Length: 69
Image (tube, rainbow, N blue to C red):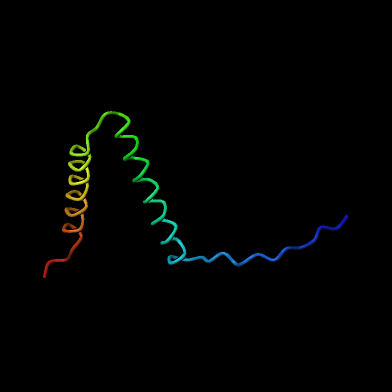
């Protein structure tokens, strides 16, 4: 018995296609990490300290990659 063909929208490809997916994935990941930390007894102040340290690490990376003027 032949199957009916269904039309689907083309899936975007390339760098711009992954940005919304990555942003959504990062939101999901951050919520998951936060929930896990809270369930393991970490206080909000401790989680802020962790976030601050992560930002510091990223800032250092950015500075290291920037060409000197």
